[in-house]
Length: 158
Image (cartoon, rainbow, N blue to C red):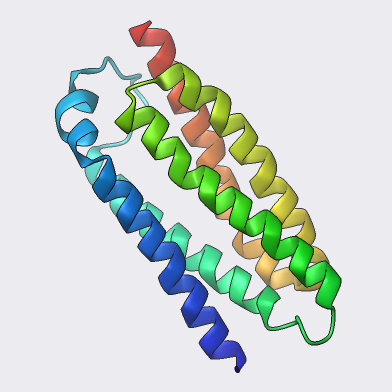
């Protein structure tokens, strides 16, 4: 399988997981989230879908670039992709905890673990392909912002 095919597979997978995650928590997004007190720096709702779509695509490209090196650096690539899979699962879990269970406190704890897994994924990716690592930096920045937003929402609604 060539590099482009691997990149496309991972991009579609990431976008699909994002879509499923968003769809499964839609009721909480529509009914519960608007009722929360939010900080002044909370972005408008329309910002989230395009930002997340872009981040999922960048994650997919990054993982595809790393996967394309598996024939040359098998063990380190496998390790990096395990971290990638873990952070992607934690990403989906956050949506369920926050929007599905309506539990900003538990989501806040989980987002710290998610951030650490993204950072470790970045650390692994950058050793294999610098561009792949750099593609994760906007994701890391957005999740940093999301963690602050999550904590603020929990604080304002406790």
